[in-house]
Image (cartoon, rainbow, N blue to C red):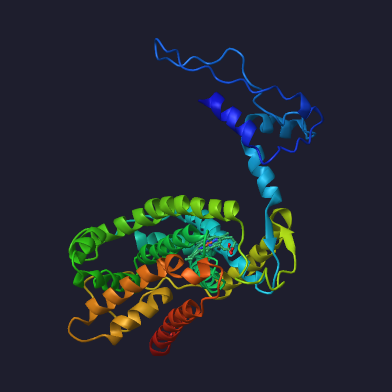
Length: 412
Ligand code: HEM
């Protein structure tokens, strides 16, 4: 099997594997693997093996050659990446937001791992372990603030990236699955925010989770889901443990899986240009993804990091007071800002059965949104689709106006 892969690789390297390589002509001809022994059915490797590394004569350092010989299957991939180009036009700026989302996700992993060294996910200790991290551990306050701010920036970047790819119609054929996988990533990002909110076990988070986990109850099967999420009738220490395991195990695992698919598609399909740009000569040329675009991405990351450190040090998030289920809920309980639009819709539909209507509207809206690449036939034929642009503007207006309304009523 391995042998067959080697032969396949040697044969399928991009067009002609550009042998950098004085000795490429000397490549050994691949030797076909002998079939399994027809009598015993046991696979016997061929005695004579094909040259495993057609690139072994490349003029690179001996360490590089050592790795290349072992990871030779990556050589065509690297060759491919070196060829990848990104179109330059007046909207190119928006291509940086996917990379920025990725950057803040990486910050989340690093700071999250550090926080986990001291955080204790139990009802008795969660709040005090946060106070300990914030007050006693060297730079603990900074790590906590970076984690909290980077979470917000990651969601903000993911939304910006989603709308920019929407308006550039980057979801059109053949990038449908980039859109779908991206949408799943956004849902996972929101899941991170929701599960992480409860972890400090402070009053605000406790009651907001109480309200938030109440909502699905009105939908059919929702009570079951709420039971699973809460680990019982009410929000309790059990809920905290569940949110913690979702936050640090299930969601990161799923996100990394889907992210790998998303990024693989980015590399394989390349970056799209807006509809009609090529034909109207609006493309000002192409730049190499590696290293030019990546270097510009890095500049974006440095600016993003500067902004993150500024926010984390100048506008620290407060810890609040420890949650107590026996005290009445304080006034002004609201979720994180990225749930404000949905929260406002629930508030607006305050009639009998209104919550169910709101949930149905949001669910149908999300399904239509994720199916946009398959509904926008015009874009997939490379024609402009103003109706979908209008739909995008409506969705954005709904999110922005409702978010602002919550801000105007409750403040930050
Ligand atoms: C954790 C969240 C996400 C990460 C880390 C991420 C990462 C990236 C990166 C690095 C790119 C290539 C550069 C660029 O075009 O910006 C990209 C492209 C793309 N992403 Fe995402 N993304 C995320 C979420 C989303 C969401 C929420 C959507 C939409 C629902 C989406 C849809 C797309 C599409 C359609 C492209 C192709 C752009 C093009 O070829 O012009 N992504 N993503």
